[in-house]
Length: 92
Image (cartoon, rainbow, N blue to C red):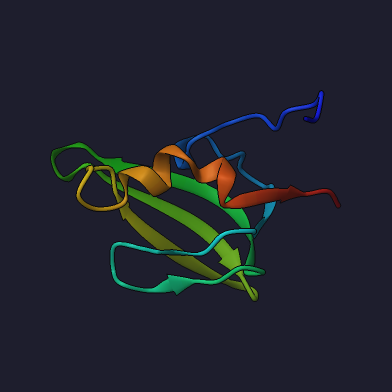
């Protein structure tokens, strides 16, 4: 067992300006699949409380893209809560 453990964080705790690469796949609220190897720079987020909507704003291939998720158990809560299991931070 490794002595070092990876810091755990949710999708709402990403760092603006940081590049990330997917190491696990997921499907967002709009049904768009995000595959292992996808990379993007995190720009920011917004949260819509009455719909539990979390939107991640990222730059991918030079374009701003919105990844919409819903923080409810029946939708993407597990993805949001365990986002550190799906992404790795890239050092530049």
